[in-house]
Amino acid sequence: MKDVSFVVRNGVFTTLSTQSEPLFERPHDVNEFYEDLDELLTICNNGPVRSFSYTRLKLLEIHFKTHVQLNRYGAL
Amino acid sequence: MSHVPGSNKAPPINRVVTSTPWDYLINGEDSDASNEDAELNLDMEMLQNNLHGSKHRHLNSPRRSNTKSPSFHSADDTTTTTTNSRPGSPLAIQTSEQKTNGSPPTLVLNPTAHQLQQQQRPRSPRVKVRKATQMLFERPLIETPKHKEGAHVAFQRIKITGQPDTHSEEACMVGTKIQRAMALRDKYLVPMPAENWGGLDPEIYTEFMKGKMPGGDATTAASDVNKALRFDASTTTRTTTTTPSVLRSNQPPPLPLTTPSTTTSSTTAPTPRTGGTARQRLRRRMDVPYNPYSKKLSPGKIGTNPLLLLAIAATIPGTRYSH
Image (spheres, each protein chain N blue to C red):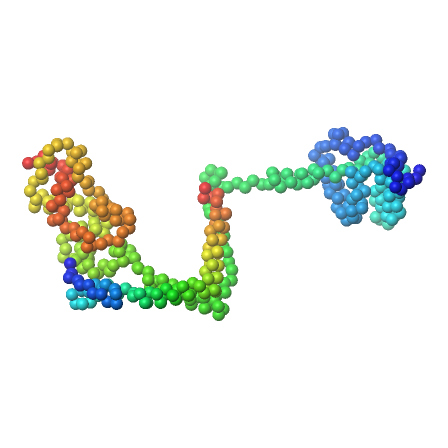
């Protein structure tokens, strides 16, 4: 097993190898996470995007219901 | 005789009615063919009445009361040339079909019973009943192909087509934002490799990967252990068969058994299965990411487990009672 060391960088524990290189990819910090979360929520609350997503979901539901109506005898 | 308007007394009527409107039902004319003709006639009559209006519909109604005053009909006759006034009355004017050809109408006084039947035939509810019955019970039965032997049941597919709006400004804006959202999703989504490595980079564990790499310098047993840790079902049996040879060469003879029965020893010792240890099977069942640091297995470490030794000895014939 390699000798590894742990370092706290910006509040995140990071695993370092003997050459002081991080073994794992540095995880996202809190600020970056909240920025991305805010952007994602803004996109989700956008009107056209919400309508588009709702339409797609309704279309998918209609597809499924149509499939059930057409093949209910075959699926029994 | 003249009827005084406003009097409650019914006017005398010279009726030559020898049959009821329902005689055609009683006299054996209720066959299918006659019914069909009657219904057709009724349909034609209904159509004609609808075209002429509600007044003639009222006059043709079999429920028309006999207490109507003749003045009502006489006044009616003065306004219209085609009348269907009270049958049997000598004042009744019966017109023939020649009227439609431009010839003067033929007056028929005291129509016969057959003509009366034709005129006063009630609007039978059988038409509607027959249509409703046909709608309900005479529909073709929907038979699924499952009812036929050897039939192939195929799912129906329906293709819904449309013309999506993909090039407008709003659609492009929506597409851009959705792509950005998908990128954010991929950013925080931990990629799961084909082999369950718990999302970790397998190249980190170089020692662990030696047996896996082709041409590696690891021993066969280590390779088997590595493959067994990767839950390869084809190599787990090899792990159980190769370890006893190593154990017999390095370890002292097994412990003396107090009970000669095989069943007790097999019940106390965990029997080797194809899926590895119970922990491995549970981990595989729960799809828990593998943690290589939790337990490090090696052939030498397996040999120090007396319970596993007992189980291995029980599986090898001839080794138990050899001292």
